[in-house]
Length: 336
Image (cartoon, rainbow, N blue to C red):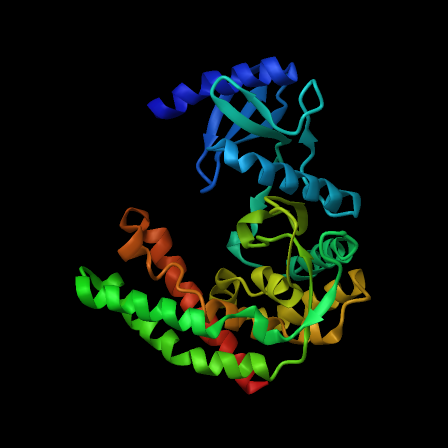
């Protein structure tokens, strides 16, 4: 650990002892996580806890709501980490300069960032179908249908692209990646009218309470099974087809696995078995929803302009994969 990590280890251990009655002998920072500071604390008996430290008190209401949704999903059969409450029964602990929630650590798991292959297609489809079936009963947003055009505000996306392209023109480009990012932005900007027409041609789609961030880093795998779904957001409504696309059409899968066209139907079939009430239109629109949402998003092509410190080899690779995946999905919709 670096000096900052060592400084945090003591307060984490003290908070666990005081609020949870848990004595730990080792605290390590987890490098993943952009919105929170995350740690793994190991007790004397080898039990490990995942400590999610929030950076401001303003985040606490959302953290409580997200924790409640996690537990709600767990009651419906989705594998989620156990939430540890404090000795006083609180979801969030405060003390020693920290505001944190504490969860069971999911041992022996990896994220789905390596892509979906083989039996994982069906396993993930079953897990997501079961999740959405139960979330459809959450009172915050019971299922309804809305025009598919509401998935993307094409006008707002066009304005974002134009602003970012203007910023690139003013500052110029400094390396090959920035030149590529500028050209990719121009290519996607030109496709936005086509995105609008594609969405307008779709039937109304289901909107309901969702996980909110069902991306590959938040689906933990163990072998060929889903070990846990993590990092729920506070209950918010969104398009079901879009959330299925977040994991089913993850760029790392589409770009690195040529067999995805065979795997995706297996995922959708497993999803349908786990969630028989799903409307066929929603599953038929998954690829179109994934393409439209990705093409309308400037992330992470604006990073060289707005957050140059975040540009590393990992981000460069992901940017190219995400761009390529968006175009692959668009071609697939056109062919269909």
